[in-house]
Length: 466
Image 1 (cartoon, rainbow, N blue to C red):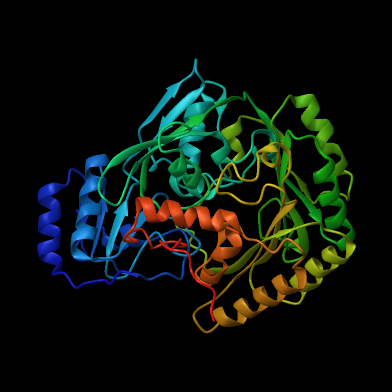
Image 2: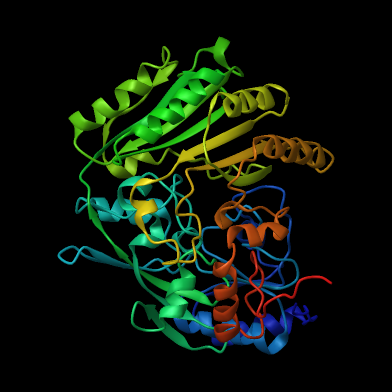
């Protein structure tokens, strides 16, 4: 692990301002507190300096500074890291949010995109040409982090993960080189970037495949939750056409204006659904879900694809603990565990989120990318809000017990949802030969472990403890 050497902030910022095209923000800057804030609450980290890079040259200069000074380096795209990796105490934050260029080739159905773009911005621009690339379920997520992790969203069953639609990437490595990685150039790096996280350099541009998509049938379906409804919902999602991807949030009903007051706090299945096909087919696919129980709210309708991202409050910064895992099935027993665990907690918000996978994602060969979970059936996340530092361990204990009770044979993890409590689980995100191959790529492109402020891949195979 690299050390974080003390550097006089004034000298550091002066050097940076003389070199950078982008903005340099230090603790005495009025914009500092806003610039160091990330999506998730509970992280009060104070970097020495934040650089909002304007271009690839700025990125290379920041990397060189971190390399030369020994200061730790955090890289930020949209700031949605559940582990808080978008910000760091005492080091340098390389903020890519100002790098937002997007070049659409509508004839070739490809796009070159810089990492500061959000999923919503990219999706809105592509939709003007009736084209789309799948990202996640939140519009404010930066495309950099979600792409490097894998990308599981509303098009996952129809068109695969985000990384399954990544054609190339441009990356500044630890030695300052700008490399193009694709199937022909640096194919080992290209393999590792697709699911291996931010371990190998700073991605400054991505080339994505675009798919024709004029509209979707999608939105929210709210059903009363019971073990029977939860199990049947997942069974329907597994049997549904691949055009339909679902995210089932089993949780207390939030106080939304379209939910009656007597339902607030009652356990519901808040389902987010997207059918990437014709309207008639979408209505047929959704009908069995509507028939599971009398809906408490039904907001599913034909819409432009960008409208599937719900509106967001920029001042919303939830403080939460969670556990990501994969499940083989949601049978009646698992559904009863979910309902019972949620009912046993008094947290202001707690949830079991269930995403049925399969489809196009599962047809990619298991070793084709660093994402190691092609055969996994369901991705699950259990999470709880907490209220202050004293409440956090209480909610973490509930999450840990819930996950233990729900655990099945598939004991792996999705790196994009790992939290600050999960460093030991990095091996579960990259099992077996995937891990060994990632270590080799790390040693080649980042031998000094400069890019370690993430769910880190080491630069050497770790020997088993004797």
